[in-house]
Length: 456
Image 1 (cartoon, one colour):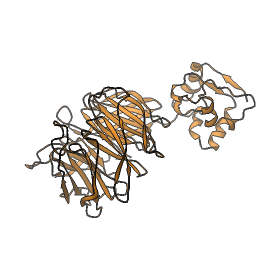
Image 2 (spheres, rainbow, N blue to C red):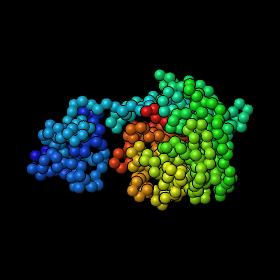
Image 3 (cartoon, helix red, strand yellow):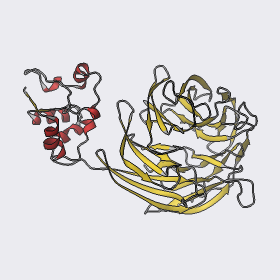
Image 4 (cartoon, one colour):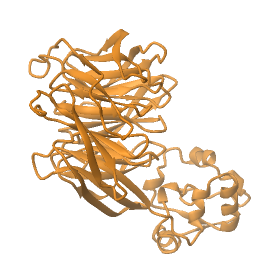
């Protein structure tokens, strides 16, 4: 087989840019071979990823600017299809790849220009942000965190404030999702603590669990058949303090998450440096102390948000005050969390300033992401399931300010980062091999965005 060498600009213009403008360069592994020209007798089958990586172990597809256009493209396409690599057929096809469309709900703070919850629709074509449409979905006060019901027909939001109909409480509100993406509010209930800041729907879709930062407690509310919320069936108050005199004089429940088995709930409390562990009864919605009842993190850490690994054997918490992430082993039979590693969210040697906020695990389980406010970046880690260890990869600037929250779309291809102070949402493509983030287009303008929840 012979290989014809083209200058990069000619290759791109003639065989990607004009023939197939929608072709994803990051996936054209065979078409983009940096400084590699096989011998005349090399067969198509030998041009596998193993051979390429052996020759070029450090190459990154999205950064290669020189290329070879391989002759006998029909043979190549036939081989790619035969081994299930249909995505590479776009190199030889004249049919553009369809754009990816992302839909999400955006939670906000409403002290400024925001009026409530927004509906975002984004269209991404290759590495181009083709369009972004942001519309008000529902007017409501300080919906700083939202969650979708498994049925896809309802959305739940906190009301992060301290007075609900004369009670010293925040709120949890239910909304019905309309065909056009707008939201119709059904009913609100007190969250039984000031400053409701985080909530989830349990895996059965029968209960909403909410964390109250100001109240330092957690609660469970039943979901009725029409999607509305009933009065709380369980409320548990946290007690204690820790060493930071400004932020840890008392309990501050900052998040609550249900484990993959739906039998345990973990509440990260910034004020007492503990992740509280509760037994969760999905039939009744009752929360009760587990044995062990909690796991401690380093004093002064300020545990904030929490995430389970997809395999259910590991979990992670991001520590707001010390700018770290702690990885745990998780025993799904007992609910026990065992600390395994704590790692910085900043580059080595970087001075610790600001605070952290969100943590999420990629759907493939290979990558973990966390947000840094002040440093205004998303930290990227690779996670090794064999060792249970995180390895630092990079910090990617969000090109905005104060990333309180971000979201990874269900396919794992994209990450959207909210810039609370800058009023922006930045779209990133996720490299499926390294976990690194590549910014797509310019940040989208949005009023005080602080939460992203994708619509599957």
